[in-house]
Image 1: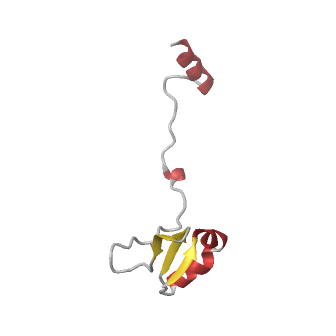
Image 2: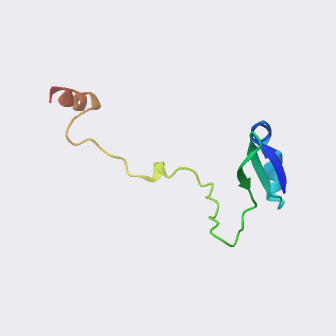
Image 3: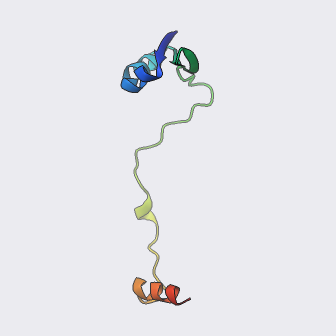
Length: 82
């Protein structure tokens, strides 16, 4: 098990995360006190699958047409009058 300070982790998290991905466990310390452990993910227990990179589905939603006002300005004017 390796030890890393919060300051070291802040400066270069990439190296530590690469080590963890390779199976290494880290203890994170602040002022010589252990505050966390970073351990490799156990893929068999509770791991969530990665999200797909499909992007936003916003364009697939049906367009909402205004029914009570002819324009946004008219709708806002009605709201101000209330």
